[in-house]
Image (tube, rainbow over all chains, first blue to last red; front, side, top):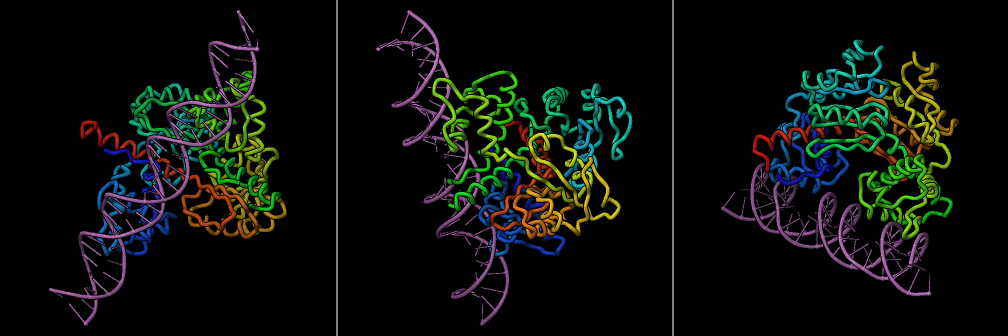
Length: 215
Length: 215
DNA sequence: CTTGCTTTGTGAATCGATTCACAAGCAGCG
DNA sequence: CGCTGCTTGTGAATCGATTCACAAAGCAAG
């Protein structure tokens, strides 16, 4: 299989979302242009992205909404639910444990981990919290597919190493840290502070331009 | 000013983080290679990124840590703090209001907005919550620079329109929705479900490869 | 069956970002 | 002072992703 770029996969997710909207509206087919307009890209981009995985449309007609949505579901691996654990049940971790969007997309958060003995044994958002110490065993026993890391930056690499050691193949990291994982392990980092700094740059740049009189 | 790519700005944020670590370790200079190793990129990339904004290093020596960190601070617009408001004080919004990393990087969350009358007038993480209805007035009066959107997808575009109408120039969106903003307004969207679907794709792909016998 | 309108799928062209490769600059040393 | 060892800054080359452009295909109407 040829390598598929991250940005293509990301867009497939978006397409699927918008396809569901079209489906709710009772549309039977959409053109690449319709889909592109919603997803904020171009018709050619939509067609190119889809063509990586096969041919789904009919010339002159467009794409059958329901069928394409199903195909994307398969491609993205969303046919069956994934089992997810959250490490670190502080404010961020706790919020993620209650995030509706995850469950409705087929990501079932089945347990949390925390180092705080007061939290161990309790539930957060109805999800049981285990001790950090038992991480390896629990990950295996509860057949966790995806580990979400929501611990402070300093602890993140250690958590990742342990999770990978226990066989984790996919990690979503919310700690503001650059993490290392071996080949074959999928890692995505959401760095919220970096996103804010991107906005800060844009604001500063706008101000600089204003002082300089545009350009 | 030539256009600077998002990915360059994103990396500058990372460089600054790692520079502080070097600084804490007492290093006076770093080479592009040192910085690249930490940030997970290449020496050439580091030099190219920096060269967009000027020349900061000395040949044969590397970059002066403190000076470069200061320069990045200026470039990223972090010299003075930004005033931030969070719209939607549910689980995600509430967690963001208490997120330490934001404050320590100079992003001061000064108020929240919520539609729930029970919350209006209370404080979350020590930050006062105002009514959605007063958004325009409060944004102007409290001189908000950045608006964080943490409302359900269906309400996000309306919030953004109102914020932009009140003069907001920078928006960080956590709602799983494709938002439209006029030119001149900086928008970043953090779509956590899409990130998870990226991992799902990787897992599904790995499984497909396994069934097919690698490749 | 033919004409006209639409829209896909895809090679080719373009664009942008990353990587390469090397001259130029600097410190240290004999 | 000139030589050695590093490291930057940057044009040129490469790589990858996006956009263009058009033949092929489907449908409808006459």
